[in-house]
Amino acid sequence: NPFAGLVSHLRAAWLSRKTWPREYRMAQLEALGHFLDEKKQEILEAAAADMGKPPFEVELSELILCKNELHETLNNLSHWMKDKQVDRLLATQLDSAFIRKEPYGVVLIIAPWNYPIYLILGPLIGAIAAGNCVIIKPSEVSKNTERLVAEALPCYLDKDCFAVVTGGVQETTRLLENKFDYIFYTGSPSVGRIVMTAAAKHLTPVTLELGGKNPCYVSDTCDVANVARRVVWGRFFNAGQTCIAPDYLLCTLEMQEKLLPALQEAITEFYGPNPQESPDFGRMVGDKQFQRVRALLCSGRVAIGGQTDEAERYIAPTILVEVQPSDPIMQEEIFGPILPIVVVANMDEAIDFINARPRPLAVYAFSSNDKVVNWVLERTSSGGFCGNDTLMHVTLTSLPFGGIGNSGLGMYHGKFTFDTFSHHRGCLKRGMGWETLNNPRYPPYNQQKFGIVRATSRVTRKGHCTLL
Image (cartoon, rainbow, N blue to C red; front, top):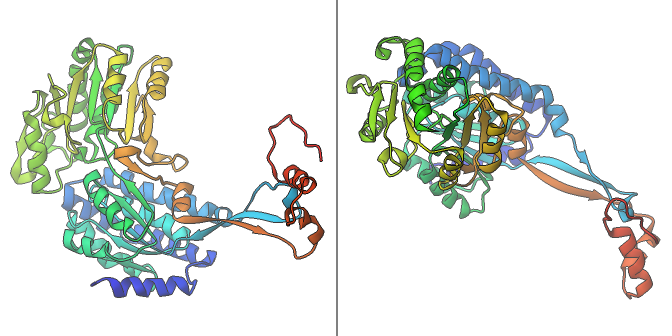
């Protein structure tokens, strides 16, 4: 295997416990901060070359979010690493019981192309903080960013413990043949199954950050203009190539008629009369992605937008109406600047529509009535939830981010990333003395001994008293 030597080299470094001291972890994390600061211009240029991504969007979704994760981790790592003392039974009151957070070992991070810096560094920060050695596999689709990461990032990190591997499907397949101690994958559910199958051969635990069709319910009682602006921003940010973007709207026919002019107004306000000329609207990442998304325009009827330019990989911000659940656009995650509207009779029908499909990465609900937002939250299941806005829940390092069911398994962000890449080792330390206290548990057994063991070893309901 072409990567066996690399994995062995990193495993030897991990077994030497080089990555375990807090000072080492902090130094490597600080180096990531230097990478972000010193390579900022190159990151902006690579994102523009790959996807026509506006600098504002790169700063917000790649650099600021990375810095937030980094600073949250540096601020709290000493506390996170400490052993956590836990409750003891009466029989273990003289002992020390604690949870120790230990690194898994050599971990693999496979990143996607849509946010190619943040979705590498986000998991990497937690993996380093937890004391692991890491192999990073950036996406070959965002080729300019891939080249930047492969050439620049290793200059900032310890080469004995961290490595970047490049290549396509063939290289990734061979990479996955190796035994890793943890695999963190971000991408599509179909490839997620391949990663999980490869991991299963070595009983390797995984986090899968996948996607799905994120529903956005708009109730009849809402501020239409505000809804339109927040939905347009969330759907067309990064030209719609966002795993948590609202994928389709659910609303009544009456609300659709109010929303359409408001959506048109928001699109014009954000991107001008011709979004193709706007410096603030991106492009599809590649020809394959452009052709797949363009083909979805045949679903329903174009109410707003619909223009395309293959030479530029441009697809206009588009709203579709008269969309049927059986249409092609409703069968897969769109991952592009198209927003279909599906008409429902009421909120209950919208909730039934959501629950009849695989559980998404996010559910969105808009209403001026907080009871409506709470009702959608309570009666649906998804990786995350955001009421009266889109995307913003991902900005909080205090919230776990991850999918459920078809949209993924596991979670990260902030301390959750540290915990994801840490083995929580349950530990009990007892003294060598006081042996007479152990006598009741030893044979030969009798009823008196059992009474003592039962009284000192059980957890009782609160309000109950224990009689010896």
